[in-house]
Structure formats: C-alpha cells, structure tokens
Length: 393
Image 1 (spheres, one colour):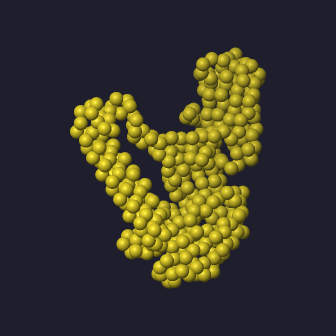
Image 2 (cartoon, one colour):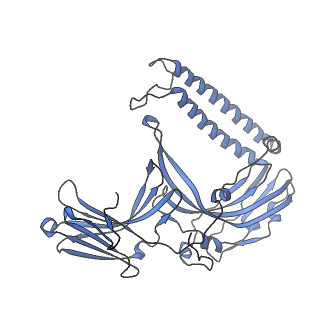
Image 3 (cartoon, helix red, strand yellow):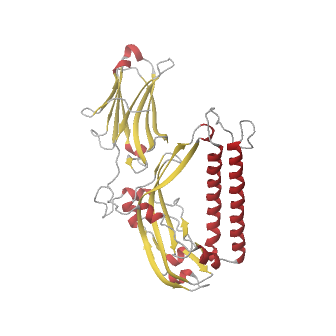
C-alpha cells in the first residue's frame, strides 16, 4: 500500500473524498507519536476504525517481494469528529527508518475505517523514526565479509586426506554425468516436435514459448554450482578449523581471547596465513525471477556496512600444531556497536541483521569462514552512542 498524498508543510495525510483525515505528528511531544483521525460523522459515525504502526521492508528491484509487520495496533469507534491517539515510541523502539543498498526499512501509520461495504476507507502516512548517527564507512563491505578466494586447486587437492580426495573426484564425476545427460536431454527436446520431448516442454504453464535447451543449461548450471560448493567443502579438509567456545552475551564490554574462541590443526605447513574477525550488517530480502512455470523467488543477503574487529598475519603454522598456539591475542566488540546498526527485521527473510564471523585466509588453499550466532547480542547497547559515532553514514 503506497502513502496517500502528503503535505510536507503540515504533516497531514488526507483523503477528502471519503471524509477521513489522518495526521501524524512526531515533533510536538518527544517520545510520542500523535495520531489524529478526523472523520465526517455523517458518513462514519459509529464505525469501527483500526490504527496501526507498521514496519515495511522495500526491496530495490523491479520485481521486488516486500514484507511488513505490525508493530502497534489500536481499535477505536468513531463517535466524535476528532479522535486523538498518543503512542509512545517505546512501542516500536527496535524498528527505525533505514536506507540501504538493496533495501529500505520504512515506518508507516495506517488507519482503516470499516465502512460496512466491500472497500474500507484506508489512509497511510510515513513516520520518521531515525536512529543515532553512525560513522561513515568507506570500505567495500562485500570485500571484507566475502573476500575473493584465490587458491591452487592442484596443491589444495594434494593436501587433503585420501578419503576427501576420493569424495572430491566422485563429486566431480557425478557433476559431469548429470550436466552431460541433462544437456543431451535438453538438446533432444529442443529438436523434437511438441509431444515427443523427454522432459523439457516447448511451452511454459502460461502457454508461452520457451527453449528446452536454455532450460536444461540453466538446470545444469545450478547442479554444477551445488556440486562445486560440496567440492569446496572437501577441499577445506586440508585442516580442521572450528569454534572452541562461542561467547554467550556479546556487549560493548565483551573481550574475547582468540585462542579460546577457535581451535584447529592443519595436515600441511601453512605459510602467510591471515586470521580475521569481521562484522557487518546484512540486508536481506527477496525478488522474483523467471516467468510462468519457471518463476521463482530468490532470497539475498547483501553486506552493507563492515569492519574488521581482529586481524593477524601468521608467517608459519606448522602441520599438526594447534592453531590456537599462534593466537594469544584478544579483541573487543565495542567498535561493532559504534559502527553497525542494530537488527531491524520484519521477518526471517526481510530486514537488517547483524553478522560476525571468523576467517582464515590463505592464497594456496580454500579459505575457512566460521559464522557466529548473534542470539546473545546486547541489542540495547547499539542505541548508546559511542565516542566514534559522530558522522552520518
């Protein structure tokens, strides 16, 4: 539902044709949203109305799948021309307006008047509820959270144990067979007349023409990507790298020793290794792709703001030597609370999230990433401005 006409001078949203006016005021009383519903009693006297404050995640895409949730709801009966509601902002403190790369988070005030007919009278206006300013971040978030993984396939394959070598070769063989057979089926169905295709039809569920060969190639590509992901997991077996103990509650004062956070051993000597702890905001949402029977919903997680909490370069890690022996350092989570925004989600698939992980990076072998849980995050401490939070993002 889009916002109805808005007058910036008065802050009033109105629909004169249906005799209802909605005023949203966030300035007169700090910490309160004042909602005023003006109704023409000759049309709406005695009718029930519902006022809601909603958070909406709007995806930046031509075929966006947006989502919203209700933060506050109050029902009233219109017995007077003017009905005033005062809603404390504490009722939706954990949600705020946000403009990002892939999503916007918007807050709306919405009133629906039950007219007793098929269509209710509805008005919706935007609410500005901004968070404390955050410092500008110049770095490319994606390069920090998901750095390009450069490795030597031959040397990496040679470094993994025999069972994992067999698994890797088996996965590669399976991928080749699946992709070859699927492509041949697609080629046959492309050349075959309607009614003689093995698997891929010349028309989608809407009756529109489609290419069986193109569909088979897309499916082969998806299968190849899935198998390659599994092969990369096998290639990581050149070493064991895992969490030893995750911190429970994470606050500004939380200090973690790296040798208590992670542990592991390598099967070969590792030279020039980088171990990092990084954190970022993740923008999550969905959009549609394809058409007809091939239409699908695509979910995305896009790093938005990122920072490095810990960084250490290790010249040599001896094989079969505990990695934690080289990580006697510690780091603090305080910068994360100053730089990142707190979680601001409307569902499991839409919104702004906090993410942090441990990375082990190497130029010859596949990188390791350990994604941490954020269930113990002290969310309230994001709302306490740190000394560095002085500039707008």
